[in-house]
Image (cartoon, rainbow, N blue to C red; front, side):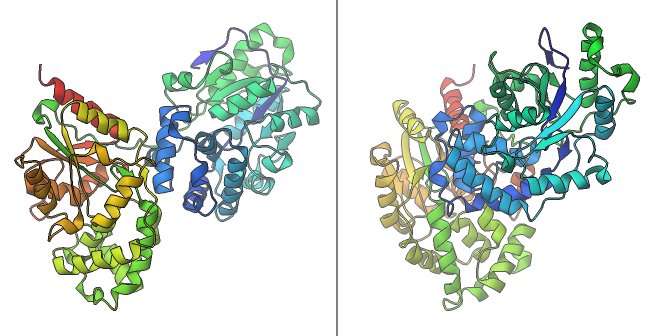
Length: 562
């Protein structure tokens, strides 16, 4: 038991959240979310996302940024499997009830393809719930599930044994508002003819659940089945809305009731010691995501005198236009003679690359998963498809540019902090530039359009795809940029980019390669795309996950070794 208020009244009713508290439906939930989020643009919800500076926590801001750019869940959320769709929608839309309603409706449509995949969240859930009933505590469920899903899951879970456990269940479509609105709680209490006071407990696994309890005027009990760290939980709540208890398992719930029974034994039909089952283990936490940890000791990095940045997916987000143009471009590959020029499967760097080549060759389009991931650029795609065939890549870039003219123009800062970082670098007397495979006509338009004011004054130099005979991963553009600055191409020039193409270009130019991991690849994947083999030797000197980490790295080099 992590935390307990000084006095907790014995419960007359325990109202439980469903998903993440009583049952585990993560497989179905995350599958539905991954189907729904790519629809944000057509649903008109991208512009409804909460501005990062208005997010409640830094984690929420990172989630908003990731979903805005990639239209999918942050990999850490997928790995940890700790949060619900309600948590996600509240994090990314805030108090925008209309946007959340559209999102919930789209989610429900997707969830119909997956629901039914349900199991008890922790071992012994049925035995503990039965013990609570035997103690004379009334049981209910309050959930943001729609009735059609909840009823099916209740009949399915634990071979149907739970159907007689709950006196009342209120679902999202039984009321007019989703949690954290307290309607769902008030509806239960009304049906049970009970007052909204501290003897009604709402047991749930999220901040939203505890906020719902607070707004309903009842006791919130945080069920920490996801095993969040205690400090993390404390950071979510104020003294006003914090839960009366934080419990890691149903065994700890029984411990809490046994503690209360010492002061209020008359409140229970049977005592906890008389009915509690033999202890069951708490829920198991999924294996944690393996975070990138490629930061060498900072003293090994040379202080940057020049920092060159990639443009797309590093400084700015132009993914919508890029992927629209890629979709339009692939059908041209047949008449351009590019299909037969693709690399042989055995020459691909990874099995995933080989599958991408095979799919494009057969269907003349990107695999849906690649489009859903939104993590690789057209340059990377051309590198995978054509390898060292420079002529084929030039033809492909030209075809892409033809279609990009129909889509380009929408450009956003990749992160809210980008401009501040660029301005900060200039205050440190570091020269700053952009290297991009964009043709100049597109780059100059986007440079003037970003954040409505443009960033023209922030850069000392730039080099575009059509400024040199060969584009990245060849180093020509990087070498041209430092030549314009009259500076030598050495490790005091950092090149910051988000792709294998950027890393290869930097290493071939003799510069320090900073891999910007905006796509949030984990360490095993980075080791796959940067294997360090004889055939693929190029690896970044350092990996940063966002501009906060990058800024800290630059400042650490400013200080230098002790």
